[in-house]
Structure formats: C-alpha cells, structure tokens
Length: 362
Image (tube, rainbow, N blue to C red; front, side, top):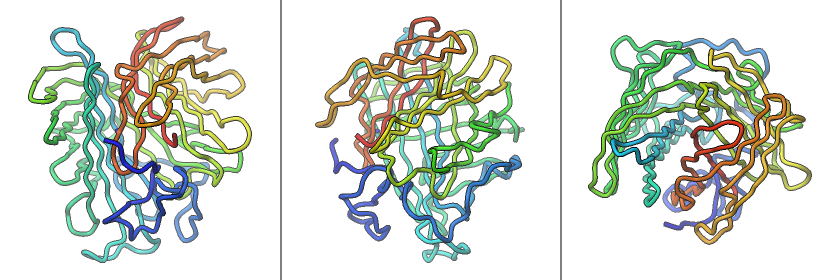
C-alpha cells in the first residue's frame, strides 16, 4: 500500500471480477476505469459551486470518488511514523441508485502504517446499499466495516473538523483525533482539477491543515503520536486520458506553514502532465504553472519486483524552491489488489518539512 498481480486503480480481480476490468489492462484502465469511456455518468465541468457539508458526501452520478487521509507523525521518542486511510466508491453502472444488494456501487478501503523499519497495510471491500460502507455528509461520517472517519461534536462543515479516524488489521491499528483551524482548500482552478491536455478533470478539494494526536500500534507495539495530517476529496467519471499510465503525487507540509500539492501524470507519449497548488500559511491556494515547476527522480529502489523512483528533486521556480525528498521507508509498497507505492517522506533544501508520496502504474 505481499506481492499481488500488477494492476492499477481498477480490476477487482477474483471475487470482484464482475466489475469487468481485466488483469492485463493498464493501471489507468484498471483502477476503477479512470481512463475508460464514461458514457452515462455525470461530467466534470469548470465553474462548479461547492456546497458544504453536502459535498463531503457521495456523488453517485459520478463513476469514482475517494476520501483519502495521510498523516506524518512522531512518537514520544521522536521517531517518525505515517498512517494512511482511504475509502473508494466505484459505480459499476450509471443510473439511479438501486436498493439493497442490487445497488451498483462497490466500496473499497485501504489503510496502512509505516515506520522506518516496517510497513503494514490492509484492505477491505463492501457492496453499497446494505449498510456495509458509505458516507454521510452531515454530520460527516465515512465508514467501511469497522474502519471509520467521523465528525465529533460541533464538526465544522468548512473545516471538516474535529474528526476521529480509526483502522485495524491483524498487524496494526490506529486511532487519531484530527483538528483544523483553517478552512478547506480548493485544488486546481477553484476545485476544477485538469488532468490532461485533452480536458480530463476531477473535482478536488483538500484539508491540508489538520493536526493529529492519538495512538498507533504496529506488530503489538503501541505508541502515542502527534503530527500533521492531510485529507483529499476527489470525484470524477473519467479523470485520466486513455494514454495515461499512472501518476507520482506529493502532499507536502513545509516547516514555514505553507503546503504544496504537486503531481505528474505519466503518458505513453510525450512529457508527463504536471499540475499542483501552492497553499500559503494563511490557507490561500494558488495553482502552479507547469512551466515553472519540475519533478525529477533522483534515486530508485527495487520494490515488489519493480524499480521505483523513491527519491525526487522538486523545483518550483516562482517560489524559490529546490528540495530533495527521501522516503521514510523505501519499501512502502501497498500489496493490495490494486497495488501501488504509498509512504511518508521528508525533504531538505531551500525548504524543509515532511509529507506523503503516492506512485501508481509501475
């Protein structure tokens, strides 16, 4: 997040083969069909007016969406840890929601914990319509089986805080309380995040201002932790172009209080499509120009039988930034049915801080 078939953000193999995505498809085609035809589903268009708390909840007219949280933490000894919590909703077919087991939505949860010497991940699946998984907008509550992210007393619609998040498996568990004193951030152009020159896009907002405190247990060893967390919300029906094969994505917390979201979408032909947002310490977000930004791999690691670019140099010319990132654990492989690399990083250079890196399609 054990080696499993090389697929991407789709292809519910074996027991979930009814989704219709084959093992041989590319990552952009497999992980919920992100690059496939989206006929019958709602389209992402510029100019959306976001409404909270309504948009914290599901958007069943769109094919794919997720609620995604990462946290960079430290224990009482100062050792670094990371956690991930993600809930995906995938529509098998367009149209009005059907009742009970006839419901056409499938839910998938991923969770992970990472130390320098350990990476543990878990995954769970559920059908919609029968209460096994879902999201309530007001008060906010996202769940799949016993994994939950829920609003606490007086949860703010504009901050989506305070929250409590938990997940567990045979090898790990965590419970965190999340607080935020700044509002949500709209990514891209006022929440319209373009993914390719052909116009594929998603609706995308974040809460990058969480502080986190709680307990993490790995292999039976528990620790109290504090740190920073970042939540992403994204939904679309066709967020990738058919020739895009995967992405390299960063969310970064700078020691100065600023935040950076930056990623590149790799394509079978031509240069990767680069996009991102700079978030000031006052919470204001500004889209980055791809002409003044770059992501350059600087180190690789052999992970799960493939060579991964786990070290990166990031350059943001108009912000005077040149940094080098280092993974906390280079072997942070999510060995889930839809396998990818996901783990905490730190960085030095003109700016210092911590964050998360996700890489798919390798």
